[in-house]
Image 1: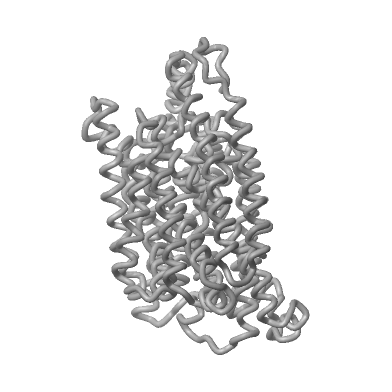
Image 2: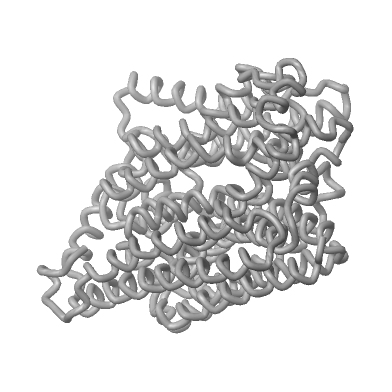
Length: 570
């Protein structure tokens, strides 16, 4: 491996992404434009951004480890995300858009009360920083191991870069770089897959050398119960996670919100197959990895088959995918802090200029917290343990009640606190206390079933009880009234704001087109430098260049002339 060429590739692409973020430094003039893209983001941009926000290098590390050890079941697990996206598109995404809220926390306050909102905010910010900090660790590990740099400095430098363009550019900067990251990652995976098959002696030899049960839908500790519970968890997670809700509320209509979720579901039907085959192939090449070393299976197959330059491209794709996921969380956590804590509690009269300053500073503060957590991951069990355990403990208790409140007229804030508190407490007891004092430890499937099943059953029980007493929550009635007021305020929005939103979207789409064209140029150059796979790289570069026409054409269709609001395009 030529670390100089790979480092140069990483540096050039990273510098380019930073420049893209800086282009949006002046587009976020208020909370709505900075955190929600003016609520007029094109649905296909929102869908790709949602996909990349959900994805990270942890996919290659955590699920890659499972793919190496157990085979096809790693794909089965990720197909539950497709199920979550379909259900979200059918039922949840349009409901979130219809609330008219800027953030999920804002909806929770209006529907369930400020006490619930504050409780959820503190827990959500802690959990989000913990999870996204944990996904920064694997990409730093991949970069440091591949290029020979120390782990701690790599983590810090990559984390600081990740924070920088989120703090500068807001949601549009995140989404534009999400698209760029999606293209780079897809190009890298499409390059490695044929090279990996070639190293294994072809697809037929790979199948012949694979262990028994390697292509079964279920395998090892990942049972049918686990898959069903994980599917339910992903309905809650994709449909209710505050970072993803932002993608549904930032488009122009409930119909567009549906399309965002459906595009996500379609991508998660196909992409897990492309992602998980390389570590599965490596199992037949080197079956001797054990313990946490299995988390490096993807890295080892990359180092085996990728020539200098293409290895740097793969590492760039992995890093960008992680930064996409973490940046979305940073943007939303910063939005929650700025909108719901600083503006809502500390300084309700703050000007837009003051709020923008708080938003950018809080992005840096929470980002530094992510870096500290990333440095601690090796000491708390590794990536797989962190992701699955935190999801099982917190996913159902935090995400199920707000989703239920989208439909229920009976759920109250008090009931929500009881359901969340009890289910969180029970999950923590079974995860931490019982194994410590009694030696009783739940399996992966049992842990996930308990985590998502208990709050779901408690919500059903409460709904049945309230219905039997014909109770309708006063908080629901207050929410309906507040929603009507917000709708009237939206209808009264001024033409200047509408024009600004259209100009912002026009600019964002043109930047995406330019970014894709420039990425194609860099790949063309790389095709001349690489020692193998040159034709494949050049073909992918040509495909990316053709794709650049789509956002360019979409930008041309946006009317940026000053017209009355009632005639403006939404």
